[in-house]
Image (cartoon, rainbow, N blue to C red; front, side, top):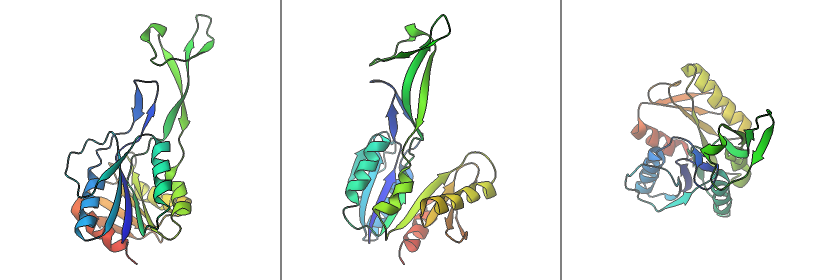
Length: 215
């Protein structure tokens, strides 16, 4: 089986020295890649430049930076047929747009700089939604089994699972892996029918994902 795994965070530039990113170590994706490789499967791993996990990886990771960079790399990988896609990367929901300062008269004045200075006082920055990579995966990989990730902080377990189901319906994926404080300990794998498989830890998750990725 040939599979593609994304893990770790994207980042978006504010200026030439400052960036907006997500918290993501990449540990889960690296562990998943190691498990699949140990079982004899062919793995393509895309890992965020700022992933902090130092675990050894059995496959050579290709680094990505911004959301657009990851999307480009996925598009290139789609030229080869893949059987399963595991999109665990923590993609930034927003990129920076224009940056403004407020004049003494109260008007917003657009700024442009390689490094914004505190001498300008309080600044206002636009946040622009980034492209939703998960929405494009089915077009890239029409026959693959696609697994999305849903990390939720607020609400209860049932709320997080409902969002996982919505992710499947909206993005034409096959499964959603739900975790985070809203879900609680472990991981929940939701399928297209709403069935839930609970995994107590990463090891059990890797085993279940391998089983579910093969017809």
